[in-house]
Amino acid sequence: MRYYIIAGEASGDLHGSNLIKGLKAEDAGAEFRFWGGDRMLAACGQNDGADMAPTAGGPLVRHYRQGAVMGLSDVLSKGFSLLGNLEFCKSDILGWQPDVVILIDYPGFNMKIARFCHERGIRVFYYIAPKTWASREGRNRKLKAWVDRLFIVFPFEVPYFEKRGIPFEYKGNPLVDAVDSHEYSRPVDGRYIAVLAGSRKGEISHMMPVCAEVMRRLHSDPRYAGFRFVIAGAPARSESDYLPYLDEGMSSYVSLVFGRTYDVLKFADAAVINSGTASLEAALIGTPQVVCWSTSPLTIFAARHILRVQDHIRYISLGNLCIDRPAFRELIQEDFTAPNVAEELDRLVFDEEYRCRMLSDYEDIRQSLGGSGASASVARAMISAL
Image (tube, rainbow, N blue to C red; front, side, top):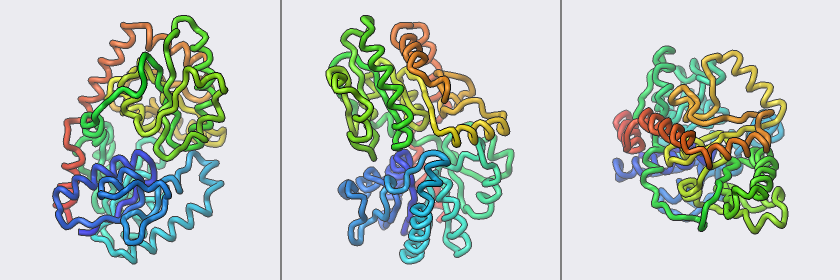
């Protein structure tokens, strides 16, 4: 069968790659065409997509780097480019004639594709549902109308979608397999603090100035003598996205490492993490963390309005949402300051009772996500439905 998959971000590329592996294992004749990244290319047995251009006859249509946006201001500034991608995607789907279009998260783009495909009789599966439990509940009506099968990945989504009468399948969370199957190796010697500033350029620009101040502050603290700071470079980014925020003298105690995020997390004493998939990965790996989030005034205004409406949403981090309590601290917008982050890192590094309580909560997060084999189970369910 022919599978057209659309993933618009680094996390979608990860989940898409594992899904491709599952589909290939169950369908010997599987053919793929996708919007994604290097992981999905590797799952198809091809080289990375560093040039972001599809090869002639190859499976890659667009690399997610070309469409990544953060917040309302970024959407407004890149609106024409995104609209062009949307029209090209529609044309490409019609030209390739897939048996199914599989949408992975990325709702601003993918919901439009869902409607387009539905109106033309093309089957639509949605893997990793839009977060309508957090915002834009009106999309639930569209999910019912345009999506043939919805596959969810978080336990707290089960009662939410049941209450709203939206059929779904829950096979666990694919991150459990991704984390547990990784072969870990230490990225640098000695003790260090990990810094994960996000996968998008906009996130990095908001995170790195504060993180750089935290690194300078802690480096001057005798308690952190011998500690390094390791920045885990995001897959779609380069040194030029990070180095402008670092002073020349920081090279003696700051390392920038690409392509080894899980390794960086595994051996860190603690981590400063931009809210997103990485915070859940840190919980599954077992890295004490503080989650930080900062964005433009326009986006934070909209977000706070949404949270006032959705009063059942008390956290921004997936791990905390899974157990409905704060396993780790979240520093949002005005609270995301160098003194606050440094204070929280002190607790994570030196307060053993605090660390142990967090690691205990991590076990509850892991249990809430179910066992292994999620990607393979979803692949089997998709093939069965087709």
